[in-house]
Length: 429
Image 1: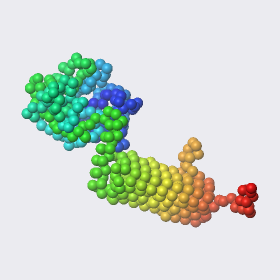
Image 2: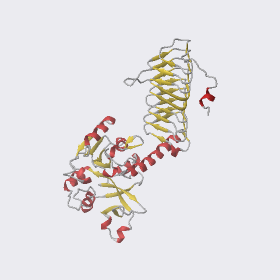
Image 3: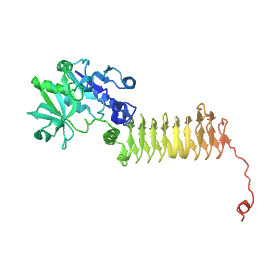
Image 4: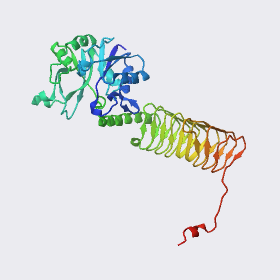
């Protein structure tokens, strides 16, 4: 790892129309700058993130997830622009790769291509069929000669399809010499990083164009860009998982968090959402079910089931309209219309339709413990804290407020009253 990386994340991102800093908006469950840092860490151990707007918030978010990241807080009022963001940066190695924190789709392979070779500057270039709106990069004999803003282009230059993708790998010695020379003597009164290219050309430095994919180097500047980037990222993620053996029915309808992990041969039906750091091992998740930060082993869920955080299902069937939260179920059947929260349920137990663990009294959460081979009938309320031992039957309609010993039946029902001919009396004309 003989390269330093600088990630520019100082911008306000006003086009996002949000109080959240642009680089903390999420792609597939992870802040977009985290995607950049994940790739950066694969090729460098000297990474500096440049911050300004909401700097402390961004730094704290990064420090929760990463170690050994350096931070450079820049005064963007005094030094506006991409070149201004680079002022005062110190790199450890002889090459410095400059990235943008709003490019979550870059890959390790592309960055390695940008850092390859001994050129003074490697500059990322995109070829666009329609380059309208972009500055053009003039290339001759495979050397960058000039960057021309569209408004300044001649007719001949306007037909040029090569544009600047905004990522540079620069010899650190050169960067240290050029950055202090940047001027803000322009219409925007900003320091432009692109000016180092002009300086390099004037000094006859070797500036190589590195052609990259538009998809990877597309910046995220709005909520529309964010949604577009997430579609691309999801497609990549799901393709990888399907190649590893995960079956997906209508994969375009499925959402998978990039932190989720899979083992064995799992099946995801249409409309499924796998969120957080969920782990699925030989799981079958049926249509329109949601899994949140849960572990599912040799089990099926849904359709329209919801498994909430800190739940562990093993050898278990969860049917339609069943919600499970912070519970461990092993060898259990809960076929339909139930809420199981803060519970432990053991092998062979059955949870009937309409069963609710009443785990919350308005102030505190309480635990329900159910042993082996327990049959819980329909429309039962289990008022926690409560323990039900092995081999117990809870009759339908029971509201259970006491512990039940092994082998017992628990039943609570009000006497049935029948009033003869009441229908005719009630609706009598």
